[in-house]
Amino acid sequence: MSDLHDKTVTELAAALRARQVSSVELTQALLERVTRHQGALNAFITISAEGALLEAARADARLGANDAGPLTGVPMAHKDLFCTRGEKTTCGSRMLADFVSPYDATVVERLRAAGVVMLGKTNMDEFAMGSSNETSFFGPVKNPWDPARVPGGSSGGSAAAVAARLVPAATGTDTGGSIRQPAALCGVTGLKPTYGRVSRYGMVAFASSLDQAGLITRSAADAALLLGAIAGFDERDSTSVELPVPDYSAALEQPLKGLKIGVLKEFFDTGLDPAIEQHIRAALELLRSQGALIKDVSLPNLPLSVPTYYVVAPAECSSNLARFDGVRYGYRCKKPTDLLDLYLRSRGEGFGAEVKRRIMTGTYVLSAGYYDAFYLKAQRVRQLISNDFERAFHEVDVVIGPTTPTAAFELGAKTADPVTMYLNDIYTIGANLAGLPAISLPCGLTQGLPAALQIIGPHFGEERLLNVAHRYQLETDWHRRAPPGFA
Amino acid sequence: MSLNRRDIENIARLARLALTEQEIPLYVEGLSRIMGLVAELDRADTSQVEPMAHPLPGQRQRLRADAVTETDRHQLYQQNAPQVEAGLYLVPRVIE
Image (cartoon, rainbow over all chains, first blue to last red; front, side, top):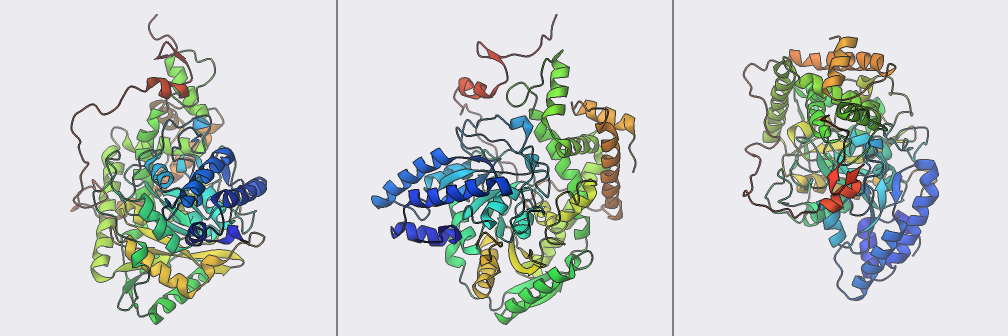
């Protein structure tokens, strides 16, 4: 079989079951590609060649014994904040540069059980804090569409790896847009499920009321297939929701006739690149031609998403990252003079600039005398934003808008001012604050760079999101476009 | 909203972060800008709304039975520790 790297998960799974290709062959071909492009893209932190080939051989044995599941033998990569037993899990940080996971995250465990072969761990913004992958201790990832540009973040390595056809799919996590924004900038499909839909056990915590695990793929159909494998109740995550997992693939083909789509007025108001707006209007036209009803909806509090997020997320991060003390695991400074010096310097030297900025912001907004003014105020505005979405979903089934205001920006363009960087997530943060599922899809090219649309649904509305996305992808080929040189 | 050098030194102490001389002005500037962004929240009238406690309406943190579920795996976990002796984590002397 040729062009293995360009095949989707669905296609590869079928080829493996039909024995047109073995998992070892496929794994070798993709490992070769991962290694060849590592210097230029820096998409991986760890490449697990040996382990991957062992897993592939095991998958082939299962395929030979007719004991295979729908994903057996399919290679994937994991964002380097999912714990993978016996392998490094660095979170893109000096703090965890040598940390070896004692156990598997539930997401990893479930995919392993399904027979997925792990090729390695992908690069990311340090502790998932960033929108450009420039905060990684292991250096920035380059966008395969233009290596002078960022891939987005924080799941930048996963998005770049999927876009460059190094892996057919990768895991990611999304706290404020960290799956959807890099998927948008790299021209791939990114799904953030509902809060609580996928277990976060073994996923290093950043902001616990926002974090959710999800997927970066090259099609909505692949996202549906993989979501079915990772979703579902896990008693080891106290935020995991006890709800049955539907057959996401079965719902993909459903016709769109009568579907009510809300166009998010606030997302088109300011700062959106007119070329991206045009692509999204064209996508809406296409969905209308499929029988969907399009109407404007207004979420008046949505423009306050970014300031709300930059209270809530840093507050939770300052608390979650207090565990890194230089004692039990992680980086320890040289020659501490006393215990306080050990804490101060291990953390000061072990964390990078953006992580420290967020820990300090969080410490400040939670400190005595400011808690009500900042933290409680933000949680009240968060409720207003959530109420806005709830009202909208009384009127429409899904809402649509852009994923990002612009296409991929140049490396270094937004590092000087944190607020400029933060505003890049202006369209993605709302779904996290309200705990909603959302998907980003490529919908055009602007000056040779991917543009993307975002579909947001009500809680546990993943079936509908994937259905709309799939119907769109049946009629368009933006999701099949490879960056020049990576086809 | 503007923070000064003393604010940053105080926050860094509370957060247990040693900052270098060069870092301090960057955080004075950065946190001031972030708190300027956060000040936009004042535009919202929140007098009639309760702070949001959970992203999913009606959900609460699930509780489990108060039973021992973990086995002793300290040897495995301590493989990641910077300094261990006789199964104990080593830190600088605290009591003279």
